[in-house]
Length: 373
Image (cartoon, rainbow, N blue to C red; front, top):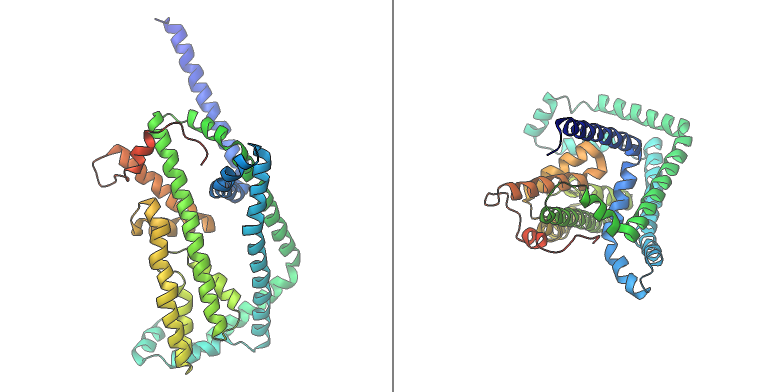
C-alpha cells in the first residue's frame, strides 16, 4: 500500500495533468475553429472515398501514398470539377437575373400583384390584416433592396476575390487532411480509441455507428439533393422558365430538408404558371414534382439515409433542421450525427428500452479492433 503522501501527490499530479489537457484541448479547438468546415469535409471526403483507397491499395502493391494521391485525383474529377462548373454557371445566371431586376425587365412586385389578384377573397382579407397586400410599400422595399445590392456589388468587388481565396484555402486544407486520413487512418483511429475511457466492445460499436451515420447521411442527402435539383432544373428548362441552373441549385439546397425540400420552389412556380394561364405547364410541373421529384424524396431518402441510420424520420428531420439552424450547411451532417450518438448511448444504457439500436451494433461490438473504413 502506498504511503498517504505519495497517494496525495499522485492525485494532485493527475488533477494537474487533466486541467492541462483540458486547457490545451480548448486552445487547440479555438485555433482550429476558423477551419472547422474544412476539417469536417476533409474527414467526410476521406470517409466516403475510403473504399476507393482500399480498392487501389492492393493494386498498387500496398503503396499507401500513391493510393491516396490517386484517390484524391478521383475526388477532383468526380466532385470538385463538377461543383466548380455548376458554380460558374450559377454565378452567370445570378448576375443575369440581377441585371434584369435592375433594368425593370423583371418586376417581382408585379408578379406578386398578379398572384394576389388571383387569390380568393378570404385569403386576401387575411393577408391584408398583416399588411401583406400593400404593393406600394412592397415596391419601395424591393427598390431599396436593389439599391443596396448595387452598392454592395460596386463597393465589395474585392470581397468576392477574398471569398474565392477563402474557398480555395478551405478546399486545399480539406484535400490535404483527407490525404493523410486515408493514408494513415488506421493509426489515427487507434490513437483516438486509446484515449476514450470505454470498454473495447463499446469503442468498436461507437466507431461503427459513427462512421455509418456520417456516411449514410452525407451520401444519402447529397445524392437525393443532386437528383432532385437536377430533375427540377430539367423541368424548369423544358418549360422555358428562366435561370434553370439557379432554380436547380436552390432546389438541391432545400432538398437537404427532409419532407418539404424542393417543393418550396416548384409549388409556388406551378401556382404562378396556373394564375397566368399556363395551365398545361402548371399541370406538367405539378405532375413532375409529385411523381418524379417527390418520389426521389419519399423512396430514395429512406433507402439511403433511414435504412443505415436506423433513426425515425422525425428524428432525422428535427436534427437536420436544428443542425442547419445552428451550424449552417454543415449542420445537415453534424445534426443527425449528434442525434445518432445520443440514440446509440441510449441503446447501451437501456438495452431493452425503446432506444435499442439495431442488432448490427452488437455484432460489430464483438468483432476485432476498429480500423479506418
